[in-house]
Image 1 (cartoon, rainbow, N blue to C red):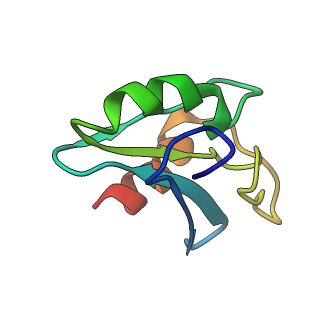
Image 2 (cartoon, rainbow, N blue to C red):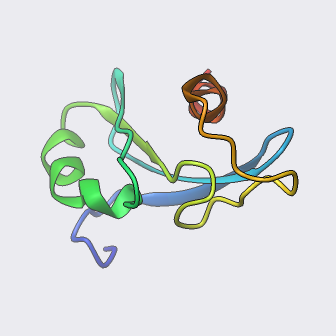
Length: 92
């Protein structure tokens, strides 16, 4: 069991073109992606993940530059389309 109390919670990393993204996955079924705000991390969703995991496959990434996801060496760009690209890549 993880520190959050979610039995099936697993941590993953994926190397994208500009960052190494960290995300957690719990449960099975239709995917639900939880995106945190600034300056939180996936951990902000820990109580929600616990409730959703019995019914859905919950995916909660750390957005670029936050938590265990790296920041691009070229700097942090705040354009929403760039921030969301990483999240799209781990769910497709």
